Amino acid sequence: MLNDINADAKKRMQGAIQSLESDLSRIRTGRASPALVENLHVDYYEVPTPLQQLASISVPEPRSLLIRPFDPSTLKEIERGILASDLGLTPNNDGKVVRLNLPPLTEDRRKDLVKVVKSRAEDARISIRNIRRDLMRDLRDFETEKLISEDDQEQGEKDIQKETDHFIEEVDRLCDSKESEVLEV
Image 1 (cartoon, rainbow, N blue to C red):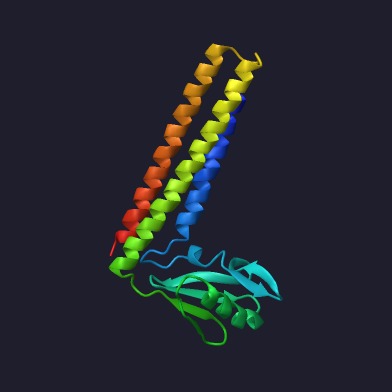
Image 2 (spheres, one colour):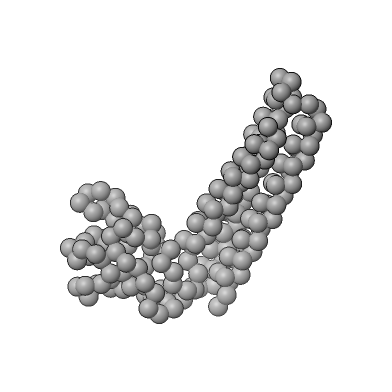
């Protein structure tokens, strides 16, 4: 039973880390990355569709993205979707592809992005701690119902705390890495 709880803790906490990585990949740094626009929703025949399903996205230069739609008729919708997003980018349409040029980040914008990174990291930490709290409660309930012994409960709590500490360190590492990437000029 303790092995199941530890496996559940690891799986759920790993999910929080993956969610954080996904969030951080969408935060703009000085370099162009397809992750900035991949999940941007575009109205395709009045159905919100992720951009990655409508076009191929490439990085021809460090500060530009090239979006090549699979269906050329979606070019206008892709442009509208980018303009409507909170990216603050203006698409250039040449009739076949959409180009996005990423201007250099200002110092104020970098500081704002660092705040966003820290906020997302704190959300991940909270998520991991909530998972710990739920599993600790489950262990106490199992001990109350005499499904496990008191010693097993204590050992289980130590194991869950060790996993929690490990994943919190991983969140800190990801946060520091992204922060230095955002502040890099």
